[in-house]
Image (tube, rainbow, N blue to C red):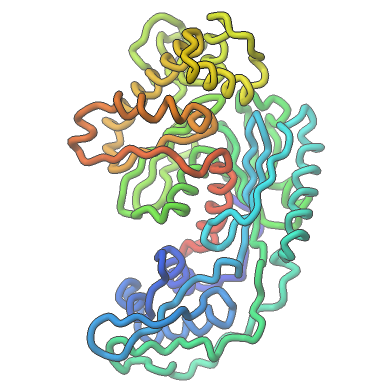
Length: 431
Ligand SMILES: [Zn+2]
């Protein structure tokens, strides 16, 4: 999935402890880490000391939980390690810097991919350099050497009873490294080969067909790079940004030039055998008035893609440009909100297909949470939210499933790509 391995965050157990502390919204005590991880108190204490030395976590006040002395809360240091997220979309190139919590520190939107992918890679690399310089961020290979591991002496408080937390920051370096950029996550439309890091032949990105984006960006920036689908990235961004419960099954519907989906369980996105899971463009909607390029009637992409909505609005008399998708979607949304019938009809056709897709996909995946997002959803939100809510089938309500609309906006893919890189780095057993 990526090139160079990042050796900054060490062992399986260190990643496990850091990921537990990072994903708890208010941090957690060392005792909670011991209970949640199954590791011994002494092991957790030693790991906490190392993470404190590395500047990856910090102590943040005390919490009282039951008998014994108050325990110190451990929190991830958000600006200790950063990652870059890039979203290659037919309409724009979005670059974000995210902190260790997956929060966007800065966002840049560059012009749409051109007919020269090499020139696009060059301007992406230049923008990454500019962002790093602007924020005083240092690439991982330029960062100061890691602090030496702590001596294997018994930690204070180790094995001495409930709530006796040993980590206290006194062992931390005076100046642990900050704003160390670990690598780049890239989100792109399918189909792509995440293992070899190549974008294959997605529609609407003709100049990027066959582009080895991982190798090219690694060469241009010196950073390790990871490639995944835009839908997988966007859902990962939602999970990280929202601190969503990892035990939930989450169905994500992404509305853009085309329509795609992603599903997660246990906090991880399901990718399938070749990262193509969730490609739902040829899902049959039951509407039989058009024949798809695949030869069948009523495929979802005949109705739920932004391009088809624009074509319908133009056929109904709207004066908009079929090639400028973001501007045309905005124009359709504005006209529909003014009550213009041509726009309203195009939007209704689009949303009816979205609702049909949600019905079918919910029956397949039995989600506890549905999130609808993507740039077209953002543009249509005032119209789409009530329409989709009203169209959600009753059985889904009765199952306890909740319906949400993304609040990450158009940067969701880039933020999610950065989160995917962090997730790879922090997953125990990886890297
Ligand atoms: Zn089809």
